[in-house]
Amino acid sequence: MRLDVNDHAYELHCEVGTTLAEALRDELSLTGTKIACGEGHCGACTVLVDGAPVLSCITLAHAVGDAKVTTIEGLREHPMLRSFVRADALQCGFCTPGQVVSAVALVEARPEPTTEEIRHAMAGNLCRCGAYPKIEEAIRTWRD
Amino acid sequence: MELRQASDTTVDGVPIHGGTEVVPLLRAGLLRAETLVDIRGVVSRGVADGRIGAGVPLAEIECDPQVPEVLREACRLAASPQLRNMGSLGGNLLQATRCWYWRLNWPCRLHDGDECFAREGEHREHAIFANDFCASAHPSDVAAALLALDATLTTSRRELPLAGLYRLPTDDDRRTTTLDPGELILDVRYDKPDASVYLKAMERKRWAFPLVGVAAVRRGATTRVALAGVAPIPWLLDGFESAAPLPRNAYKVDVAKALVKRATAAVAG
Ligand SMILES: Cc1cc2nc3c(=O)[nH]c(=O)nc-3n(C[C@H](O)[C@H](O)[C@H](O)COP(=O)(O)OP(=O)(O)OC[C@H]3O[C@@H](n4cnc5c(N)ncnc54)[C@H](O)[C@@H]3O)c2cc1C
Ligand code: SF4
Ligand code: FES
Ligand code: FES
Image (cartoon, rainbow over all chains, first blue to last red; front, side, top):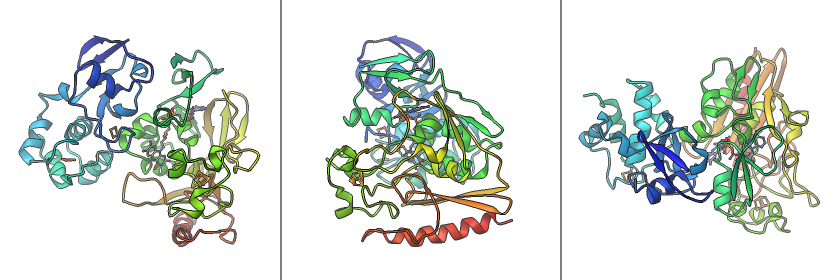
């Protein structure tokens, strides 16, 4: 099968039933995408599929087809990354790749989101360390 | 296991759309499939006045101004943004119970066993109506909204009112839906309401299943009210006399009464 990840076409072999998160991490060594709950509850595994945030831990790799996948590795140059560092929007950092991916999708659609819009769009990314206020700040100030 | 693309609406295997329910169930061993059939190519993704394709993701319904308030709000308050991008309307109507005994594969009545562990055990989130055989609480906000709208479903084989999609499980037949194997939901139709609203009580402010969801729809002088999270199937409200709360979920009766009062006031003409 093929996967288009971060504008690179990969050829890989995995069994039907393999999730996109497993394919990214175990087959392509793109380990920036994290698996925490593995069942759709926490958002740690968020990636973009054709620009929309989805949960790679419950997406079948074989169902992705020709869609374009963007992982945290593909967002290295995005100002949102620096904004998270500047705002100190993390503690342990495990949820951070997923947070950044969701945040990027939000500001690409709405460059100046309101607090309500931020909370609505980020509701699917849980942070056990409770860095929420700083995450909000990072998103509010991403272009500074 | 193999994954096939459906070429038409006759499917031989387990249909998968967004997979938000199918994939976790497969991984937990609660669903077994030799063949998964990806139905995204054969189920409509269109929204027109009074008709929504079963393949439309909740994220699109949530912000489409043609869609009545009750259904938009039910979608907006369902699940998380990522799940709403992935999850389809049809798949939402067919989601399985969130009862933890069932999800942990305890041999309960819904798994063809002879006991309901929730009735004696942990049932704070469980049903207050029709809960004597199985006390699971139907988790779909969307189904409650469509039940209040008195929507009609078109499947690959028939037309039926939304209420006809669901059945209470019994000793002889443990299913909670009437859909046959291989039958696909294709779209949902409804008449435009004069006013409608969806209110949802949850454990936290966002991103949680409904403890109680209340959908109210008014057309002329008639208001129809349907509830999520209170019975094993989406529940058309016909008073609270038949409520039979369990020791630890009587609070749901109070919550439901309060939300019904607010919802009916909100749609009053
Ligand atoms: C963690 C979590 C939280 C959630 N919270 C909520 C919530 O608060 N409120 C709420 O309402 N929902 C909630 N959901 C449910 C979510 O909205 C559904 O899982 C989603 O909409 C299902 O759509 P899907 O396309 O992913 O379905 P799939 O997983 O692809 O399919 C689900 C089921 O429907 C069948 N199927 C799918 N489409 C069709 C069709 N067109 N015809 C016939 N059969 C079909 C499949 O065979 C399967 O049995 C939650 C889900 C998760 C995982
Ligand atoms: S409530 Fe239903 S699903 Fe849960 S344990 Fe009882 S019979 Fe099983
Ligand atoms: S790891 Fe995918 S949602 Fe938690
Ligand atoms: S920074 Fe630790 S979980 Fe979010």
